[in-house]
Length: 214
Picture 1: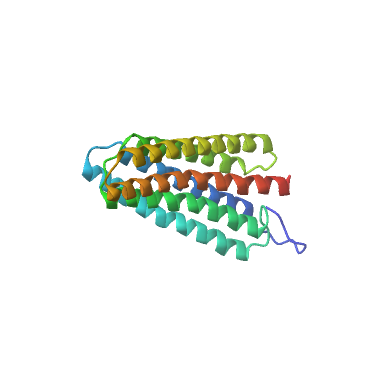
Picture 2: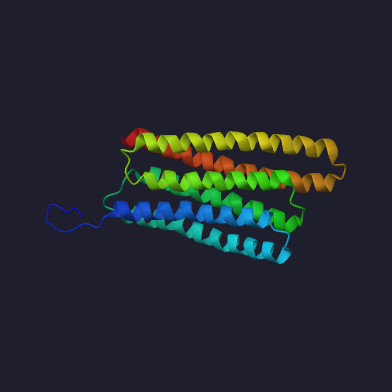
């Protein structure tokens, strides 16, 4: 623990912030895992339970983002700039936002889960798994190579999600004649793909922080 020039002990705010970032990333992963489980279940009641759990976790994720904002406003010492801390917290929360949006759309439209939905949900799980590791590695910013490796893998998954999304949308437009069904599925596809986009956005924020602080 650091001290002031008057010998007073200062709290280790770095660990407070890293704990909040880690919890935010872990919450996104938990939501992604529930979404994947829901898309793999034929039990409607089980699906509903998972969707409701996702909604509750979304509230937790928003609370963690708010905590970063509050604590950063009071902190005397922080791991990096206040703007970067808020950008990181906001970007992590955006991942949770779109997982929740995807879950809500699947639930509201009451659509049949087809292969591309399941595949995109799996990519989100993989992306969030790496995101948790990446954010945890930020506890030591000198681990630049390790962090960059995670970032690269997340970007590759986002690129793969784009391919899955484009193929799914093209097939839908070519084969579905019901305009309402096209709208429903295209909106679900879009929300799932956007969740992977948001994972990449977290990566962009992290890479910027690494450049500024190493």
